[in-house]
Image 1 (spheres, rainbow, N blue to C red):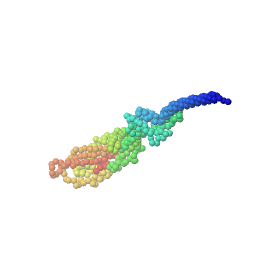
Image 2: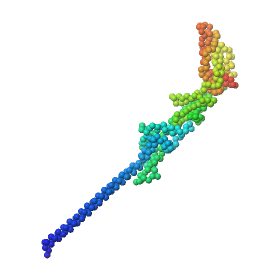
Image 3: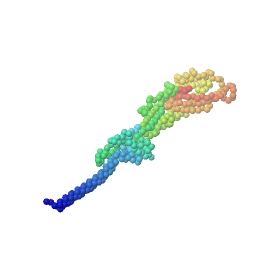
Image 4: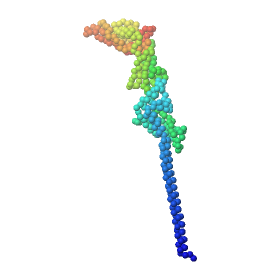
Length: 382
């Protein structure tokens, strides 16, 4: 038979035992929470470090860094880098050498600053950029490709230049018209038939010297694809330097026939003598055969003068004299064809009116040809 005292002792022991179990669980729970919390804190710190390192490596792998490096060469005006890295070498014509491309690039980038801009066709795996000036003028385009020689962490790609296209424009051209017997040079290089535009244009003036000679036609040359404004020179048919005139309105050069030659003074005397005799022939102050010595045998030009002159209708008059003779123009077409414009004044004393002589000007446009080593009149341009 249990007593009440015994029951009380048993209840007390059970309560003490339960309290101990509760205290142990709380301690375990608190410790577990501390460990978990510490692990989470450590994990978060490590993850933060990992994320920061990952972001740093990721940002470093972006292709724009390579684009910045390439663009910096342009801002440094590094012409050697541009020329050596151009994917395709810029071709030049036979009238220039490679130095003109360097000069072209130097002039284009001189004093300018540059930025890069991603192109519309750029892709994540094939980045592509334009290089342009601050004011928007495009000067180059480049593409990047993966640099497989570099192993970046986290599988990131390294980039390198794949191609660089510098926008060069050979925009200069030259057009030259010259006698076909002359030589034309562009930057010291002689032009050939390969540079002709079409065929040589025959001279319409040949009609005044046929059948004794022929006046050279006109050759029209063209050269395209030049990087610099060219130097154009010419030589006449004797090899002497002659004028090459630039026409800014048509952006073209023209080479005219020379104006002087050895023996010009003698031919001028002959030309003045002919023109004076011609004037006197028309006024009937020279004989019917006075002109014959100036023309070759069988000349159609002389026959035309004799058939069509109005000398019979000329007013009767007194004495005449030739004054103020002048050769106003001279064009040397070749060794055997020369044109001269000759002016003379025929002073004619009339039978009535003023005592002063009447002045009758004669302006003759004469083509002289050399036959049998002698100058004669080939034709007259009326």
